[in-house]
Length: 226
Image 1: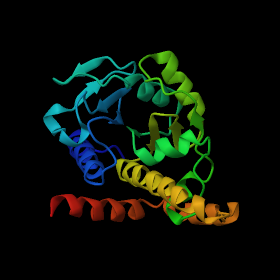
Image 2: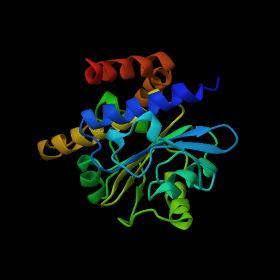
Image 3: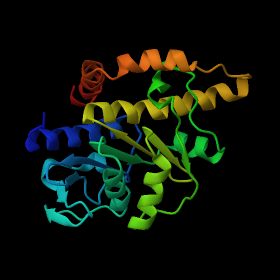
């Protein structure tokens, strides 16, 4: 079922505000959502947490602006390349959380040592360059590195997560940073026991339920609105 455009715009703005409230985005980062007819709804070149519905822009499949007053963000190519490579992806978040930069700098992928990491059990490959993704060639390289995974870490730069809904995107965005934080906390304590493949697969089946993501989103929205 395709979500009405006005509702989608409201949700993009709310997801950005929640991420800012959680300290996961600052003046940089961007969120997009796939629209029908190969169009893309995008936050513009401004701090995501300060974006209002009127600021959102609509792009074509190559990142050219079709509607709206804002300027496309400088790394739109990352989003367009991923959408072209992944028909299952409906929305994308790119952000620069310190925890993701720290883990990527070690060359490690995210380890599933807490339940918040289950969505990433198939791996979080590392794009091994800090250079900003400002053209289609670099965007394609990020999309290739991501492959069929849920998240990709970008060395010195941050992370990018994909999802099938904005509810799920918010959860993935928060849980990826929580997982990185747990990994950083656990590292000095000794050998870390990770979830087994069987445990991850069993838990992942439950994590795909829409009501699970909706409950998660409702909680974080209440933190912003109240």
